[in-house]
Image 1: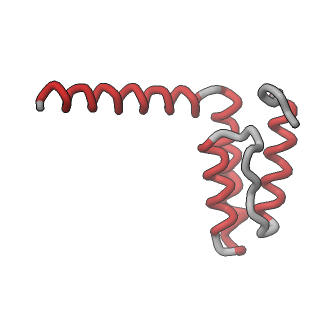
Image 2: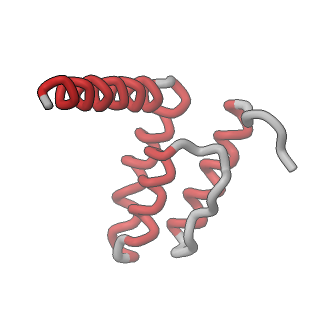
Amino acid sequence: MRHGRPSDQELRAIFQQELEEVLAGRGPRSCTGLDDDTSQALWDIFVAEPGDREALAAAAHRAFAGQLDGSNAARWHADMERWFEEREQRRQQS
């Protein structure tokens, strides 16, 4: 059982393994340490037609790069902050 977060090196190995699996038509695993954006990109490959899978690999690489550089998490936090602000505005208008 893993404790704590995987290192960037471990994440790279996990991503490469998961990418190879989905390109081969096998579904991605859960609880890998990959973030939602990266996992969704892998699922998009898995559900695509076999002939279209390779073309989606670049999007998966971009999503994974966003995980490593923190931009996926930053966008998620900004989206959540915006959601809470909108909710508070609606509450105050009621």
